[in-house]
Image 1 (spheres, rainbow, N blue to C red):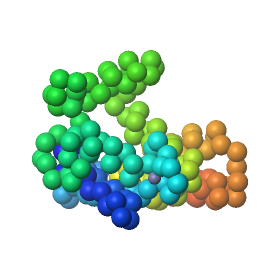
Image 2 (tube, rainbow, N blue to C red; image 1 turned 90 degrees about the vertical axis):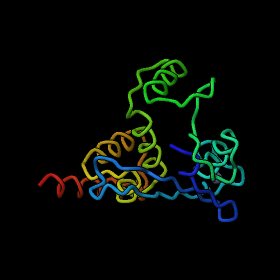
Image 3 (spheres, helix red, strand yellow; image 1 turned 60 degrees about the horizontal axis):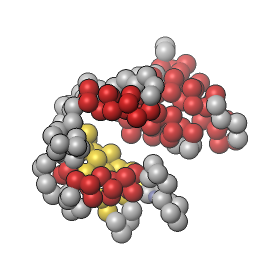
Length: 163
Ligand SMILES: [Zn+2]
């Protein structure tokens, strides 16, 4: 990911990231995904707008105009997927795969009440894997009316996606 692949609007407090081609991108053109600030007086650790600001600050380009890589290792070299996985294993001392952060992020959004359709759009999931993440996340959370509607929607989509 390059610095210019992140857009940030500090007045409206949102950040957008450019997602290049993936196996689920039928046209192969890439897409933008936009996330807003968490809305708290002091942003949460996972606030997308705050994170975008922090990584751009670390990258030394708050305007986001550079085509330099956004993430680098301590020697200033471009990070690799294998390097990030190794660093996560070292930091968190647990089994980590290439999908761990994607899965954890999906479960975080489910716990916060993001509707499944929006989560699927955000993560470009066109399969029932997003429903498995939702089910896993909701098993750990006490039900409220909002969560129950997500749960029932998840079941509804599971039935219709599997037919
Ligand atoms: Zn925020």
